[in-house]
Image 1: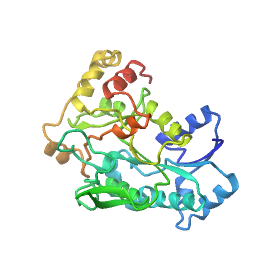
Image 2: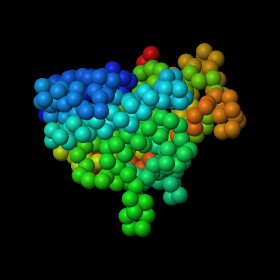
Image 3: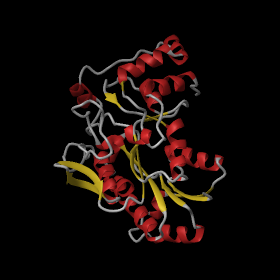
Length: 311
């Protein structure tokens, strides 16, 4: 592969993807998501015709700052970046027979499966506008997958989340990203910064692993479709705090007088610290592991990031 168009190269994850593409000496045309947000797709169409890429990578979206509560007040931006843009990218790429990749989110689920193995790529989202139980952010991310052609159908007597046609690109679901470098968007940084924490179980994503994996898939002949790009396993907030405290970073925090405090209940959390409902969920990673692109177990990945921590 020689050339990639990267939409959203200035965001937290987009910057890391851009760096990885350049590190591999692959040509890259960076574009802002806002610049290609026209219903006709004319801006992206022109870029595709002029640059003739081999792949289009969409890392753009709207997450809200400092957290998803902001999406409740900026609904137009959230809808455009998370639900409309993916559809535009797919339409332009399909017209030009181009493979594409879109960064989605595991935050379209809540909880775990009855078996406790996590939600798979074919499980219908259970934290979306269709259930009327979600944040505006999660609802828009689920709509984004619908704009890419996915939806609920009955297969073998049960509901399944499947494409309405040929899967022409990748949908990478990441969740609660973390890394070895201090950053306001880094989950580890957030846990250390929050005055009080909600104890919840989640699947999480090491960007140091996930970004190279997504670029690997983009330049490979791997089967297209949805992939849960998270570490195998899950972690509770209390477990993560324990790993932090056991690390050299934790020793430094202890010397500084840092104490980790927890909300007494979910009700306490929502009453005092949050407005929009939060997704706390576990994803199954069997599919990406079988494809040969699996990530390391969550505890190994987190502990290594803590050992390599930089400010």
